[in-house]
Length: 123
Image 1 (cartoon, rainbow, N blue to C red):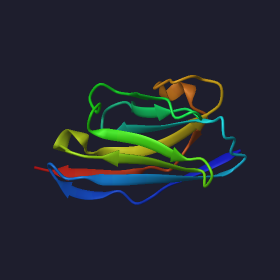
Image 2 (image 1 turned 90 degrees about the vertical axis):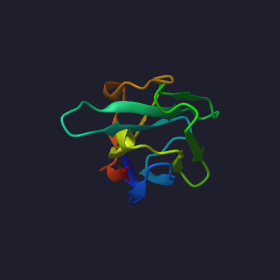
Image 3 (image 1 turned 135 degrees about the vertical axis):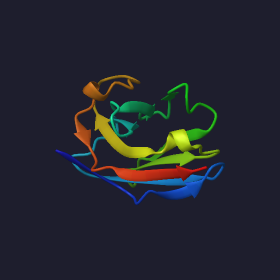
Image 4 (image 1 turned 90 degrees about the horizontal axis):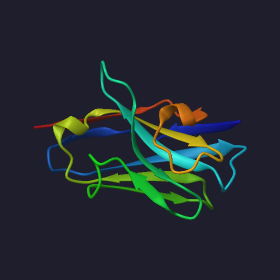
């Protein structure tokens, strides 16, 4: 079992930045794929970014160039640096983990999920 706990999100104005973190505990393996997802009210969860144990990444097209995913494998912490935030980035953000799935952004491929943290961007 893997437990994932996201840091508090926050509220920013359009154009601002936020950094989310996610602490993993339990049976955490360095080869776990780690990812961020987000979900807005009335919408399905959507993949934001995923990273593998070697640091390879894949981003959703909507965040490419503005968001950066990285991980501190020694401390089992996943990060999401978000810049140039816009109101459409407002959502509940979740970190997730899985093994042996490749650089997938499909929610159904992930086994472990955090409780989520709210990000609100005002115009």
